[in-house]
Length: 107
Image 1 (spheres, rainbow, N blue to C red):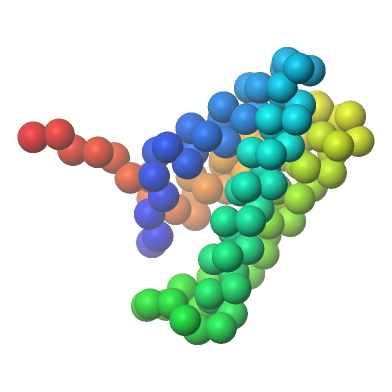
Image 2 (tube, rainbow, N blue to C red):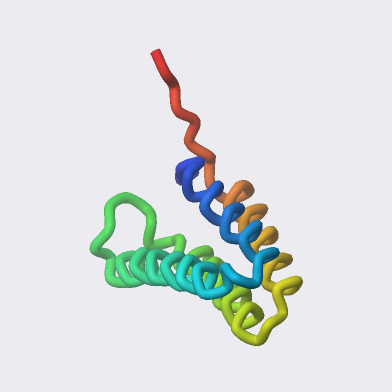
């Protein structure tokens, strides 16, 4: 199973929470656009096989992530913060289900 950092999960949750503040709309849009760009970069690498290991089999998963984030972005741009929040919560659930969340061990 792939790993994802706790910071990534917290970043998505933070963006979801910022949706409650209309003054943060532009910031939320930028956050989601950055998440989409990152996932598109991963998808491109997986599709072209320039990656290590078995990540090439993750194309459908990455496409699902991008679709979910794009849906949240579209909803936010249309002023439907409730739908955007719902989709971001679903995205967090998807990440937790499909990735192992990295836990930092301090010695």
